[in-house]
Structures are given as structure tokens and as C-alpha cells.
Image (cartoon, rainbow, N blue to C red; front, top):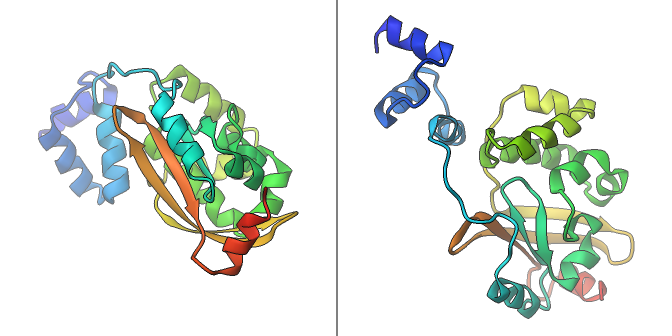
Length: 215
């Protein structure tokens, strides 16, 4: 890449570099996979997307069918769109209408619920950067609201970009006690802006018994 072309990119004159140029930039900057994907999203043309907020009836039915597992649907801006009863009993932030990032940083009860809050908060900020569309005005308003929190502001300034991943998560529930649950993320077919999150306890474990006490 020539120096004049790099200057045009830096000045925003060329807003949509080719995939080859993006790969070259990612290599030059030594970006990891998450940051490289975020770079590609920033450079992509504004997409035409279906509704991010309407959850299909069959997805609602699927959530309700998971009677033993907390499950909810969120969009890539971390708005909760739907949740089953066990998810709502596990944490208030899984109620429809909540935003997971806002609750993570601005709701004191979430910090008490998650023993590993510092690590999960950092993952949340990195996942929001990786998954949310930075050109969306609603995302910009969300980030502006979150930046009222010093912790979020420091994490956001790191520019980490890593999509959510499957992992074990610990909860310290005020009624059910301690739970260790496997978190899995599933993309909704036909609604790529929506993600189903399901929590499962290991069969026969104390966490499975604790889950049963939620309802």
C-alpha cells in the first residue's frame, strides 16, 4: 500500500477499503481475530438488516421449552429481547427490556451476583465493541451512557474487541446460593442480529440442584 493511499484511509477519504487491504492492515497492526473482525465491520458498507427487536414465535417457544435451563435472547447491542422464567429468576438483568451492558456496569446488584465481576465486565465491554454496530446511533447513545462509569470508560479506552464466547460462569444467587453454569451462545437462524444465550448446569451437580430452587 502506498503512503498516499494510507493517508486517504486515515483522513476518511476512502471509507470502504477492499478485503485485501483490510487483511494487510490487520497483519501490519498485529491484530488478533476479534480485532480483525471488528476492523472489517467498521469498514463495511451500512448493511440493510431485518428487525433487531422482534423475536419470532418459534424462538419464544424454544425458550419456554428449556424449562430447566435459563435462556434469553439478546441483540448485538446487548438489549434483552425475550427470556424464559428460569432466566428471569436467575438475574433481573435477564428481564426483557434490560440492557446487559448497562446493568453490568451501573447496577450494584449485578456486581454482588457475579463473584468474577471484574473479568466478566471486561469481557462484556470487549464483546460490545466487537458485536455492536458502531455506526448505529443507538449504540453511540448506549456507550455515552455507559461512560458515566469510570470502570467502563477505562475498559472502553483499551479498544479490546472480542465476541462473546462459551464459558463457565459463577453466580452468587441470594436464594439459590452459588451456581456454576455453562454459558452457550447460539445465533438465531434468519435473524443474525439476535443471539440465544443458554445456561446449563452439569447433571447431578450442586448447581443443578440450585437451579431447581429458583422456581
